[in-house]
Length: 329
Image 1 (cartoon, helix red, strand yellow):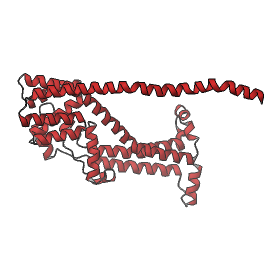
Image 2 (cartoon, one colour; image 1 turned 45 degrees about the vertical axis):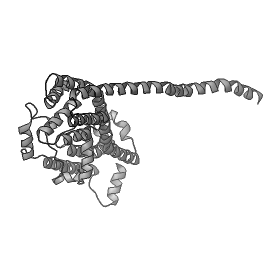
Image 3 (cartoon, one colour; image 1 turned 120 degrees about the horizontal axis):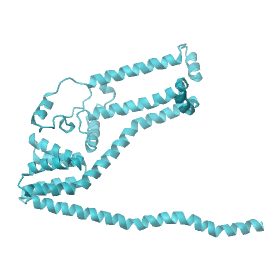
Image 4 (cartoon, helix red, strand yellow; image 1 turned 60 degrees about the vertical axis):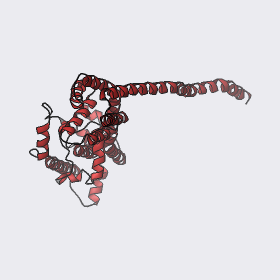
């Protein structure tokens, strides 16, 4: 703090540094409020009204039927990239993570930017003004307030990097977790779909029923089946809807499921028989993967055991030699 005061004095600024920092924080909050206000739009768009009119009962307030509108307007251009290609990559990752909201891309970039500014700002404030907090809180932040100015700025830069790239790592983990859930729940969903078709339901009605029944056990598959049916009901060609399902999930098993359905429809093969065969193949493939991991276990264990035992063996072998060498010398 003293160095900051000296720097301002050398620049000819006699204002209290604390007052200057408070003014900068107030300006930042004002800009943030303007950006949030510009992001809020009043009233549904014509596209939203069409989707809500064709949505099933109980799905009007769901995030999965809201259209995407991620073009930055107003103050949002400060946070959201103007490149549609870059926004498309983030939009795809967000969909694969299960975020189907209309403003998911904008929210992602706003949160990312806010964390990049908020984390170092809070840390610097605690480092410089932490002693003015109540006694209990001041004791907690006392190690931070003891840091030098150089250390504070270095740690603040690290927090900027963490705040900017942290959401990206978190999003990657969400994508991996959702893909794993879809891969594990797809065989059961195919079995339910086969039973529904054999019971007399059409393919679309059977998929809607399965999405409703499996929502408690595997929400990602229920969401994807619901989105697929909404797209088909909205008039999108079936092959394009299944291609979008493959792209939206990023799961190889779901891509194979789309190919199975399209081939069965094209060549006239019973869909229930194709689903039964594919579900059996998926379970066999899962069993083979489990066996492969089990076969890799002895090799991995041998490396760990060798790493733990070799130092002990070397110590047992070399200790007598070292004792004799010390005695002789």
